[in-house]
Length: 268
Image (cartoon, rainbow, N blue to C red; front, side, top):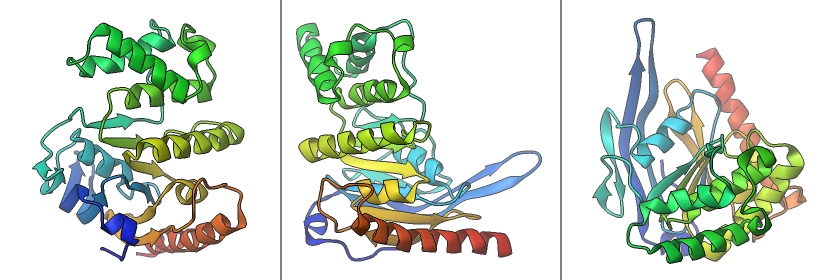
């Protein structure tokens, strides 16, 4: 399903194209059609949020975009090239920070820069310092993972993902396990970083307000099988306050549509 998009978005070239993607998971006890004929175009520099009830295929779609999972049918194109596996230009940030406990903060960010063999060690250090400053952790560069709060760990994970300079950042519910105050701060951080870098970001979430706060477009998915139900444009200026009345109006509209997909899934 495609809808009209703002001129600033439609003028940009396509970064990711999902074409008629289907994916089925089968075991000895059951089979699940995770995705059914899903198509979606994401333009360069766009921030797109995928939202929907559990089992609608959001994370499966993200994994297929990343090249971590292959579709049964259909294809994904990144810059016009077929995605056949993971690539340095598409990095994934998960719900868990997945930091290495034997490395300090600086070492974790440096580890991500191993994906850049074209850089000297001095250049890697400069880049690591830059991104730690960007996420506000320059004073904690020598701290170990066990000394960090949950929000600080996710900031390190974000710096590690950004440091190799990927063209696309794929984020799978990265703030879901954090408390509300920490999430609010990270909403500000990720908006600021996105506005400075204009990375293409695909962000999976269950949180409607979070999606409206961050996304240019919200892709609502329905379960059983996973399909794109509706796409919402979010024309609000940035930076956005997650508690603003304008944002709440958009969130209410999307939440109503989301409840409809859940109701239909239970009645079918």
